[in-house]
Image (cartoon, rainbow, N blue to C red; front, top):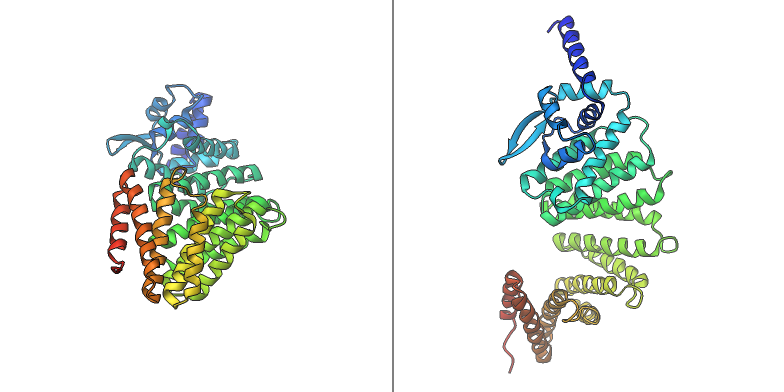
Length: 394
């Protein structure tokens, strides 16, 4: 196309945009940061807030947005060239980007009607967030970085609750690129450490779900980076939480690769966490870490023939059950009873200890009662399989 024709098209579109009412222009400029991802209804509602109910129809009529459908639900798309033009000609691109981020984050903080309620809507929101994070406006501030950090945080939560790896992948990119750029360690150390910790959470889930050992090892690196800021003296609670999560990913690495060194490092991380997360100060965190410690000690004992580790696992599970009572936390109590049954069965088989085998049966039956009563059929079936492995006693 000739340069003159292109200039003519640009001039015609400039006039179209100028003739839009000011609030509608702001919606157009903000939505350009998401293009070319299709915008689902809830996100469009957030962008059009304060712009009037007719703003969506106006943008459609002026060919700024094109309506489509995804799983019978409407979406609105902006052509990439239109978006490029709007971002280049906007008088305040930073304000536009902030409006886009606010609308996106509003999906996490608004009422149930604004949240993604179907998989197509969820995936559309994730795609929009991905486009937003690929470009950062000039002169962005630390507060802008914190807003993007919130986006990454709720995408992480969304991905973990829904099992949608696409959401976790976008959360990872936001944390590794945009958040890291806008919240550097030297200017915002606490924000940087938070981002590193949450990057570890995302990488661990991605590594587990995809069988990606490299992602698991990157999660370990991210947690160690966070611990450079989250010291026991300066941030004891964050330090303990990060130690527990570091133990979790080291345990996964150790169990997947038969890496005894990683398992022992996980034990060290859990013990470190328990120095701060005491039963008195943080009973739920203490019980969770005791259960995690029992799991990794059980793995060490089963793999390496370390009976001392198995007995320490029994102690850790009993400790967790001091907080995880059947009345207060029935599902956690039942899971811990099942874990206790596993390690008692292994001890009983190795040592010919019929008392340990009977205790294993008791633990399994206790877990089974709760899982059946609560309708957790998959867990109940797993316990039945474990129970069938216990040798008969006299």
